[in-house]
Image (cartoon, rainbow, N blue to C red; front, top):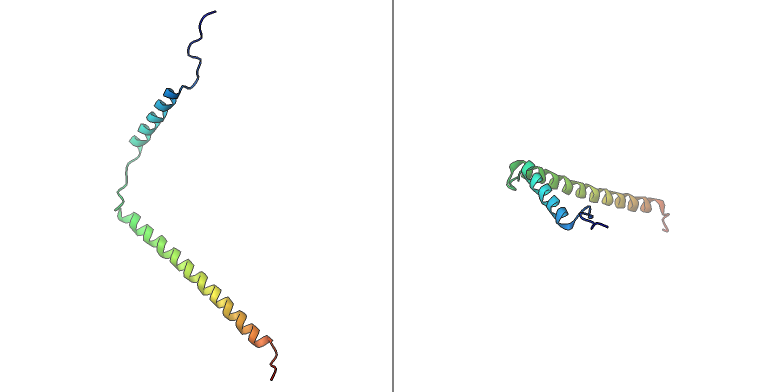
Length: 81
């Protein structure tokens, strides 16, 4: 019986070459964006401010609910005097 050769479908060296080639191909397609990009900075600032506004509005709603609850309790309990 003849010896079996090339029985492995994917060798570890072949997989490593594949990943290397895919990485090189992606590197050729894409380009690095400088982190000092003005548009990115402005977008990040808008998102940060919007997030802060959402937090403040949420806190105001909670305070309003507490205030309404306290007012309701004051008006709904009978006076003992």
